[in-house]
Image (cartoon, rainbow, N blue to C red; front, side):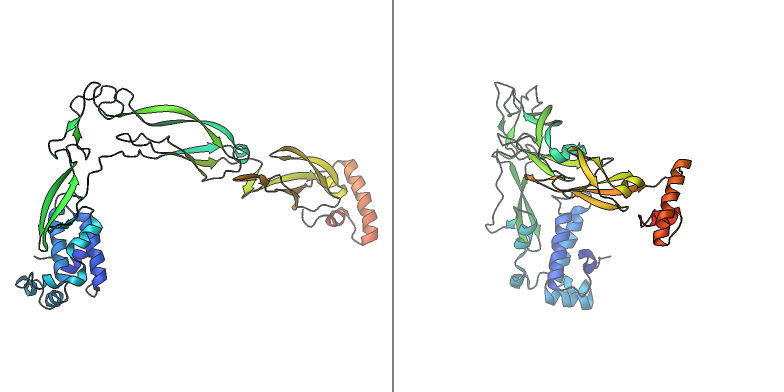
Length: 377
């Protein structure tokens, strides 16, 4: 039983011409026999062509909508020479598969027999918090393809040379003529014998097994700039895989990820941390040392400092990436440590002070006294 042409292209029955064209391109790209090697792909490709042949032309589509397959079988091919608004079957195919053209003198795809650049590589690298802040030199280990020194990348045993491929006569390409209801079209594809190089190696190099390159593990020292963050990408030129036929090597891209720090938290170029002080230090004020990424820094705690007060150390944050002279700030949140238990002597002294303060404020007791200093416990 014939399939519904709308179902074949995956469009609704009220789809317009552009929707049908886009659906055809998508399906043709997916099921073309030289792209899809699965069983049944070629038959499916023919069905897609037939569906587009009918639905892309208003008159045949109208007959199909009214009478189904029987309405277009007898008239198949009628009006195909007047389909200039389609841009031509070859134009569509050229936008899907480079190298397709009409049988009447279209373009063909030339073999890329020149140098081919090597592949780029990626490496994920973890850094400690301070390494990301201040940067520095880091040693990494990578595995990549390097040009074989024995055969100089030719893949042939020293003293021998590759010969021209007999399948494609050295062009690196084979041609295939495809006949469709729109005419004959020539497809140019990579030669399966030489994989597009146009050359065949008879005596392979023992060192690289004819590949022209070997997998090598090596150590590299890379420079980490100050201020890098999660996801920062560093490009290490020419440390990717070796190129083919004397082509340049690819690049190595190092993606950086920063380990969490127990004490410091980063927010852009600012650093946050917490500092716990006693209730007496908060009441009376004091000078003490706070930890920063630069080392201990003296911090002045004013008398009557409240819980969660944020104190700022300017220019003690993260250097701005690309401009390490400019740095963010270090924000220190002050936490008040109020003891759950007091010694007898401490309690007596605090109660005396609370009584004095209570007489002045009308809020007696130790809790009222402490409440005058702290908004929260």
